Length: 246
Image (cartoon, rainbow, N blue to C red; front, side):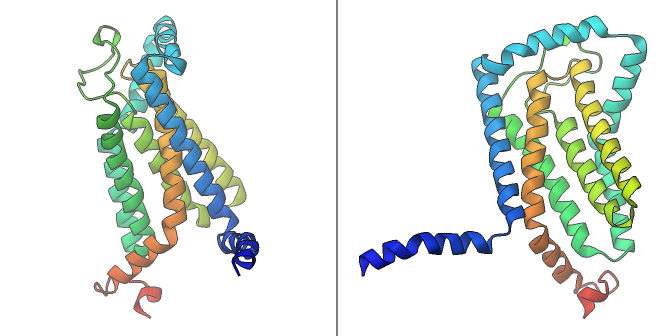
């Protein structure tokens, strides 16, 4: 009997794997790899070794390329990725979804952006890395921790959410433009934080990895999250769409 059970177990495991969609397995793998990358960068930042050795090199390189025009561009990009702007755009997106009576997607937006804000604070406190020196900083004093860049993390998540919201109504060409624009803006916000002297290079890279890990989790859970949003909307008849009211 024991032998039969052992012989059956590989098939059982294959059956379980077969019930898990391939996309979910890929996203779970991406989330794990990205999380490992963040842990590796955090450890390097704490020990001042590995990739963190590139941080002062990158900071010195930034000082050599600074110009008034680049500084204005960096300041504009940093403003675009600020908490105020990200928060305002999130509210606009939620109002738009409420008007369209799409509580399910609104719930995904809340989870995505709210989780991004939580992870920014949580990882900063967990790693406890100080920012670069204030001597070469172009902007106001910021005494919060440096790892990861909240501007970068929140911007990447918001831009990804924006692409997801606009995707169904966009043509194939427009979709390509959406992805390219979102990628350029996300990279620009991250580069601006390095340029202005608020973050180390590895802070910005870690922010992208945290965003990838979190977005992977959100995408895997979007079905249940949308279900929760639809269920909650039934208590507010004017908010619920036809699918929620039926």
